[in-house]
Image 1: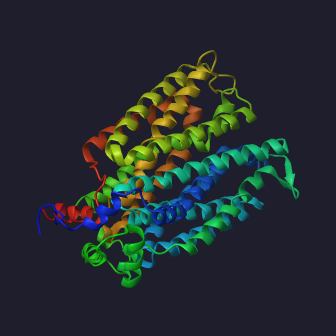
Image 2: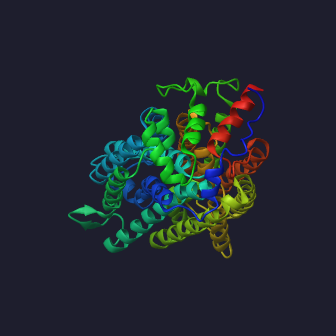
Image 3: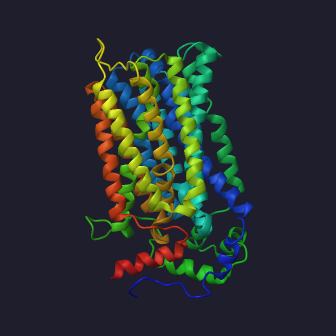
Amino acid sequence: MTGVWVKPAAAWTGVERFEAGKGHPAVIRLAAVAALGGLLFGYDTSVINGAVAAIQSHFAATAATLGLTVSSALLGSALGAVAGGRIADRHGCLLAMRLAAVLFVLSAVGSAFAVSLAMLGSSRFLGGTGVGIASVIGPAYIAEIAPARIRGRLGSLQQLAIVIGIFVALLIDYLIAAAAGGSKAKFGLGLEAWRWMFLAMTLPAVAYGLLTLTIPESPRQLVRMGRLEEARKVLREVLGNVNVEQKLAQIRHTLAGASQQGGFADLRGPALGLLPIVWVGIGLSVLQQFVGINVIFYYSSVLWQSVGFSESDSLIITVITSVVNVATTLIAIASIDRVGRRPLLIVGSVGMAVTLTVLAVVFGAAPVNANGQPVLHGLGGPIALIAANLFVFSFGMSWGPTVWVLLGEMFPNRIRGRALGVAAGAQWISNWTVSTTFPALKNAGLGLAYSIYAAFAVLSLLFVLRFVTETKGIELEELSKRFEGAAER
């Protein structure tokens, strides 16, 4: 077989009739439950923000050990992402979701009652493993149950849940710290406020686990596992008036030749040992992190304190930034299926490059105090705050949600889970690299740090222009056929 597959004239008539309508409540409900893992993803990765200063004081941590503790969750996330993709392809998405929920609960309790940095770091590692699994399973499941016409909007729910989770974590950090009189103060049951920040995650984690009991397995995973009658039922539920037998045949064809053991042999290819499409996913993942977005959320309260803001004001600024992130994600949801994935990435890259350059100039030109930290006088502070929030805006309406949508839909059916796991694993390793190097870069000069992130923003633009193709409105089976045709040419 050669060339690009062209769908037969009547191949998708059932799906297209359904998609011409206004949507389907069943699909939205399933996507929302899957995206709840993203909320825990956002909460777990950001809750540390309000607790960093208290943890450093309580355990007398050095900058190096603190950085390792903060970033331990990210190493767990890399492991969880790779493992989650394999679990999904071998055992289905639901098992992976439930495993993630258990890990979130264990992490919350272990972090709250940690008696040493080692215990805290281990608990954060467990939570990170859950985050990694959720980061793979959410996009994969949503892509596989969503009709093509609204797949971008539903896929963006993952990022919306992530940023809401970030907002909730930062808001809870602020409220608990304010009620207790500081993150180091006692809050209730003899526990310090920072411990309650972690413990609060148990409620949504338990809710996530219970809700996964109410949704069906992905129809494409059901076909992979040979559970065809269940697949028929789910396809009717999510696609409405569709020729189910024809759809099943198309899914089975695109799964032909896939490893039944969920191994990684199917990802091997001529481009440095991997299929080119896997490298594109890795590139998107790495660049999404190397622009430095998570510095804003992991270290922002400490960052703003270092340039003269109080702890309370710094936490408020961080909460406002997270609100901006939520608002811009809503913009992406409204536009991604109209504008397309590629245009959003291009606009976002330009915006990030400009705003990061402004931050580099402001911090690079700022005088330093006796501790070697920049001091923003006059218009420097407002300009930095505006530029930081415009950077979050540029990221939130583009690279934040769009990369997750692309990772969920761009890979062929037979390798989706594993390929997504590898790409997400690269994303978490990149996230870890940025997070662990930022304290040293901050000490070397924030102007230097933001200059590096600005350079990667420019590189992200070049990468999209060269390697990313549009997937808007194309059925997953058609994307799989196009991949096969391109691979055989």
